Image 1 (tube, rainbow, N blue to C red):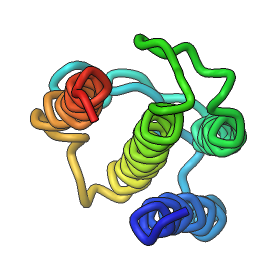
Image 2 (cartoon, rainbow, N blue to C red):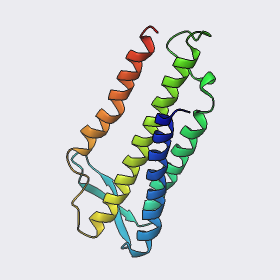
Image 3 (tube, rainbow, N blue to C red):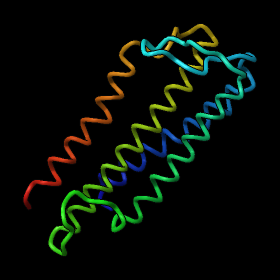
Length: 155
């Protein structure tokens, strides 16, 4: 791992631990019903029991663990180019960094959704905001496009 890899893992871990902390801290203070779904405009359109905040945390724990594990087996990935001894290190590094970046985006996205759920219940937020969905789409698609371009680039 290079310094950039440590940085990516640290940012993901901070988001993960912050998510756990915020749910543990606020759960006892939540009302019985909390937003459980937001429409395309970021406004809550469904409410459920407050235990639903644990569901998103559970999904985040699973995603975090899965993406962390996957980074240990890059030789099992399905690459769009043939892996040779000459390009293996570069291809594996690119793929692992993409997964680390996506882990950051997903952990912080889920954290933000749960934090907004908590804030909506206290009336300090009206919803996710209209910009949420476009920003998330860009944060996921742009690195995939950049990765695709880099994979095909000659050494």
